[in-house]
Length: 319
Image (cartoon, rainbow, N blue to C red):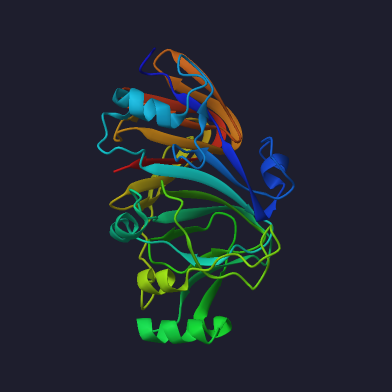
């Protein structure tokens, strides 16, 4: 097994009551239903592990590679792969929800990670929006507004457009709304607390479970918008925009219109998702084809790489 071989992944796809068909129509994925909401493109989570498609580890999951070949990941600490990359197709609104931090998730849910995430808007309807934060000044005010179902005055709604980016740290009240196609980079967690679900029925015809007390426990009160500073590196045929660098992970948007200069390693390992176009990933003397919808992990032993072609990538790595 070559330790410089990128791991190309077969995503895990999930049916959701709010999902649609754009994961098939735009990316060519084999969706399980006409209401497919989530593509877990880079995932070692037990609820949807991605399967390696190439090389000696073909047929194994990313979780298998993590447990059996930690050298591919710079012997990164921890029992669990830290990140999860998704593409979400919101045909209708997702529930209004909030996620716990690591300490709460470990104490109450007995899972390794809470859930801090971020969203890159791939595409959206002209009038699309998200729920991002709330207006309550204190936890008691938040509790009261939830109890009285004052959703219109409590929830902050923000218009969005393609290319927008949002950081959603744990404790942030949020919802992706209908008409949005989003790439999400997050901690490897599936812990979600629903605070409001529009009183709609689930797949079984009954209202979906809410988690009111947990939501009140973990919501940031008051909500404060995080300050984001984008760092841009421009080359003749490429533009690199670092969208986020925080204590858990970094996320960047790479726009390539020809060939990048050699990119020197500054990561333990690299997660790449191809949003548009096609090209090649050059590692030493070998070029690997890239196409829209590909998800892959570049192992830690790769010291230098180049991207060639006409393509847009979202690239992340743990810190």
